[in-house]
Image (cartoon, rainbow, N blue to C red; front, side, top):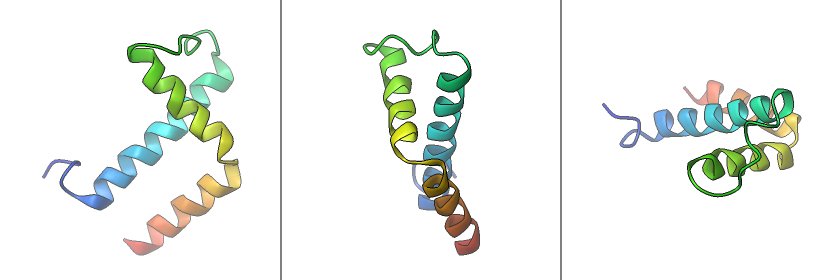
Length: 68
């Protein structure tokens, strides 16, 4: 089943995408400098991840893992 039709899979993909983009932006900021186009989507995900402090992301991952 596709991740778009299963809520738990969709949530997993979104959380992993946000965390990955934030990690990449922290270690390689030049990759995500463009705010428009295809890279702009990843820049926005990294921006969301930087606003959601690490403990909030960790808490959401723990709650998600307990719900499965």
